Length: 193
View 1 (cartoon, rainbow, N blue to C red):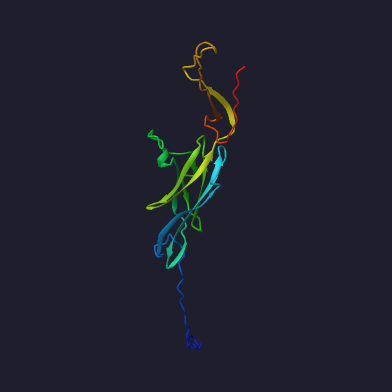
View 2 (view 1 turned 60 degrees about the horizontal axis):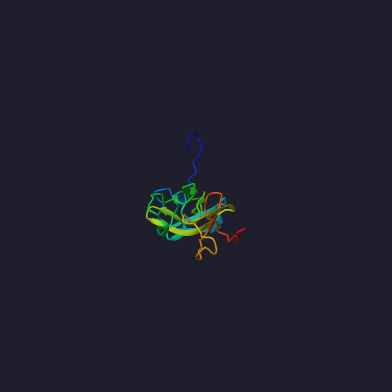
């Protein structure tokens, strides 16, 4: 009793329940990053002036469950394919924006490819440490805006009836506004007045 107040003896049981930590950045969290893959390149063929969205997926084994990994940086590159490199040193094809993107809560990272003024095939590569994945997309030229006649340097012809038959080959080049040969076919008609 305490100053005339009697104590009642009771027992209280407290139960402690451990919480499961789901924060991948916490050192108590066991995550093994195992896979990096390009899940989408949309569209996979485009014309100059258009863009393509690139989506990467980073996953791993988290306490025995395969899941997307959040908060990791993915490096995006757009390159000239090896068989098209000309030894001039510039291996980039167009540009990626951003070049580094962080994965979201689902393990996805996003970047946008822009071909700038280049046409042909671009190799899209993603990487994180020792993991990489790559694919190709095709860039077509813009609209035709110029026609250039290519006349050979040896273009002296004899007049008919002057002692023989002669010919000369004249070619035409059709290009877009960036100086790229156009991807579409065009009919070119040559005539002699």
